Amino acid sequence: MTESLKLKLIKNAGWLFGAEIISKLFAYGIIVVLSRTLGPTGLGQYSFIFYYVGLLGIFSDLGVGYYFMREVARDRGKAEELLPDVLGFKIVLALLNFIIIVALTIPLPKPGWMKVLIILAGAEAMLTWIAYIFINIMYAHEVTKYEAIARVIERTWAFFVGGSILYLYRSLTPFVLILLAGYTIREILRIRWGSRFVNRVKIRFRPEVWVSLLKKSYPFWLIGLFTLIYYRTDMVMLSLMRGDYETGIYRAAYTLIEVSLFVPNIVVSTTMPSMARLWVEDRKTLEVLFRKSFQMLVLIGVLGTAGYYTLARLGIIIVFGGKFIPSVPVLRILSLAIPFMFLNSLFGSLMNATGKELTFTKITGFTALLNVVLNYILILHYGASGAAVATVVSQGVASLFSGLCTSTSMST
Image (cartoon, rainbow, N blue to C red):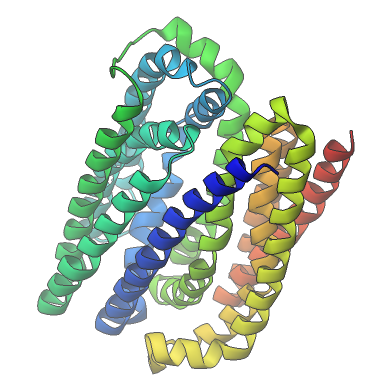
């Protein structure tokens, strides 16, 4: 690995690491304040609103954003050529997806105030889905500092302003409204800073070009769709099958697991553009980069499992309080999935960067289906603990298949 590449990766990782640490601390603080103020039921309602909107965002991208990032990472001159059509397509998709959210939310068996918040969250999500294109531009240019700053600003707003509102009013509605305002600020910053990497931001609406884009991007959409189902379905199914309290118990445990996921997020965000470029320019260096990343993620993942399993009870009591003691066994089960989660992020990044996205699509599709089936069966009988077991098994199966495919592709 060349020194210039090492320095660039270290610099980008440094920005994202700093942002992730600050963001996670504030996000962690928000969940703590929310759980201690509104209890497991309030935490479950909050989780359902945002996980539900996230799950319904399945038609917001169709893989175009990831395809755009990979192509620009390989040839930065393509940004000016692709951006207008990609941006126009994303705007249309965002509007269509919002209509889907509204249509499916109205008959939902939830209180009216929750439906209103879901629709408002869906409206803000349109801006988020569009802003992702500008994140893709920055990442394709191997620049992460602006995204890091945007995240920190949003999380700071959420913690101090949102936390104050929650403490004063002790109600979920004003708190969610403040969060949505913070998300809007973040997306505006992303769009503004991402625009600096192109000479001019133009929008084109050409359906014939969109069809051509879809032929190349649909594998990335399927990957995103299956991943979305995989990571969002447990919370939504828990809420609909076992109620808000059980969802809150599971969310408390999963929140602590999410803290550790900043590690693979940083590794993938900083290495994916380089992997795409090295696959074309220098495969020997790519092998070194992948091996180093693999070794680091395995080591940290195993240590993470040991730490979470040992300190589960202490962590739950300190962070969430005695009301969340039922979250302890759930956290211990989920801790077993950490090494698999870490490696799946790396395997997926490598396969997408090296043109093996169809293979990764098949793997994520199978594991997403497996996850849904396991969640239905296990949640029905074991509630939150069943959802945790489904996560561990699905992540383990995904790691097995992805590892085998990655080993084969790297040896050819």
